[in-house]
Image (cartoon, rainbow, N blue to C red; front, side):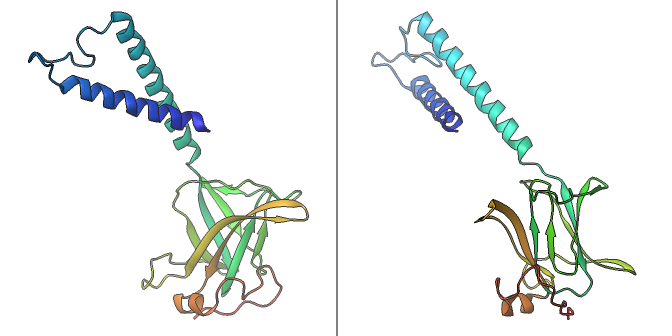
Length: 201
């Protein structure tokens, strides 16, 4: 993991050195060459050029791969109609079903308990997600807006915890009004309990 950062540091050092020697004035009033000081051996110029090119290509490749890995699918979260409280998704659970994909989006359909377990792995990166209340009559969208905007989705977190069976990755967020989110902090509701949902205001 340290190699990309080392390559970046070396590339920055070479660039700074090149900029310095490109514009410095010689004592006799002559200007140095664009990259190297006057009198630099040809072999040294070639070596520095090859190393700079290799570092540049390496950093570019690393950034490209990292950017690809940070792209994830959009997600559609279906929450039981009227549910208010914390919902939780637990990933990489053995024998749990994988997440279905519909229209290029991962589908998270929560049971009445608010706890969803899946064998799928958690994806990282930015994507536009969508949230809905669902019932037998259909689905209606839940606004996901900044504070003061009337949103119903709050406090989304992605974390990892240790247990008897090892580490567990999960995602949680609160469903309800901004006032309800402020009154009911994380941990006050037992996510995954069989208690009936509180109707949203």
